[in-house]
Length: 300
Image 1 (cartoon, rainbow, N blue to C red):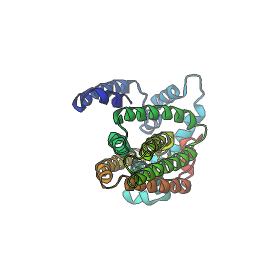
Image 2 (image 1 turned 120 degrees about the horizontal axis):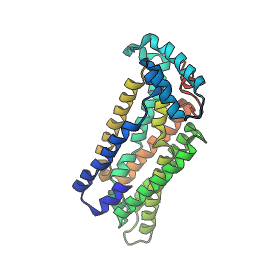
Image 3 (image 1 turned 180 degrees about the vertical axis):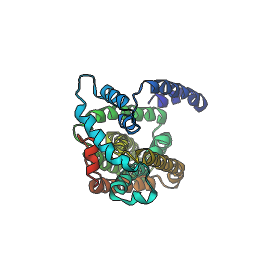
Image 4 (image 1 turned 90 degrees about the vertical axis):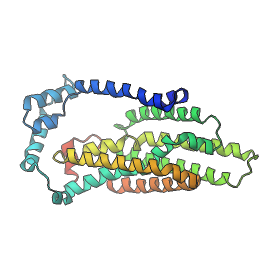
């Protein structure tokens, strides 16, 4: 949101330089983040493992039960610390990998980064004059919607939010697609042009709200929860690579697709979101309230 605001007043080179500041703050803050308890236990640093877990859970919480569960889980996985590619075909590895990577790829193929990166162009094509201000408004909406998600994710569950989020994005994108299709058949001087412009803006804002309510953050949460610890590092890296690869692909093609046909572009994104609803309904388990060890039992 801050980047959108600064983008109204400064050129992109200055904005890029200003991006150094949050990176610097993040680097400094990393020194205060406790190490992963399971990783510490895996490499045999038991005292450090218990200390880190106690810091994360709170000093007034009894962690003895969780400590024993993690030790039992690691005792079984440590028998074979090296995973061969052929072993990934086992259900307990194959299914979590498919779900984690699939969610991150579908997150990008929904076109969200295309909408974010080219929002000013989209709003201009829709006939909205203050496109930069509208883009900043989208940033505000995303922040507020994400705050609501923080409250909802452990109350309503990950799976339900993903389904609602994907369905909401599909409906919102369909509204945008229809408004762009109709603009081609309405006279430029018609009062309907203004209505269709507002409809496009409402659709984009609704899409951002729906995305922030589930598909924005939850795929990353799901991925961290369902991957077995002995492949978490490698599989997490592969999933992240896939996410950014498809982000690059969507960013590369979005402007070309918008130049080809705006309505057609949003129709494609709508189809992806509809497919995502089916993918989540069939394959994604509910992980709310479950420990990592309990989640692993779902894939055996």
